[in-house]
Length: 139
Image (cartoon, rainbow, N blue to C red; front, side, top):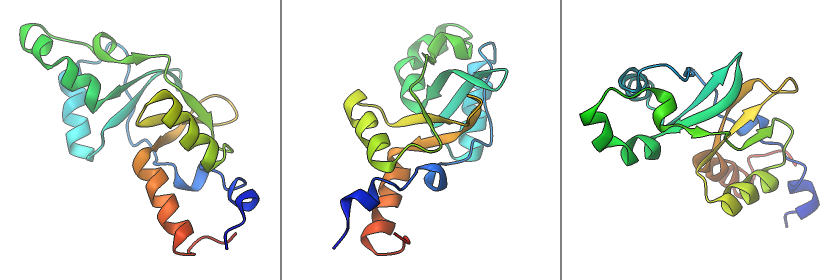
């Protein structure tokens, strides 16, 4: 049987998806869409000095698709400002709780200096759950 207290000690660090790319506020949205498609990702942190100031998600893009036909959009025009962030040492249960509470599909993971470490997504949470249930995690 799984010990809940042990589970609460598992951090998200090893389940966090690295960020192969980040965006700047003034990047053209079209170039970010190309990068997302090229990398097969759905979330890109928007950074200033490698610290998160926003996030562009597939959902943000879809909500603004009609606007992008009418005008040239920049990342800042569609991004979610002040994204939810969590530290690398945050427990899986806390990360999942925050995502559920805020009804979001991802959170930007930051290191001890507040710089982008990666992205933690609902898919990452499901992968962690699968590994735990299958006994593939040393508890």
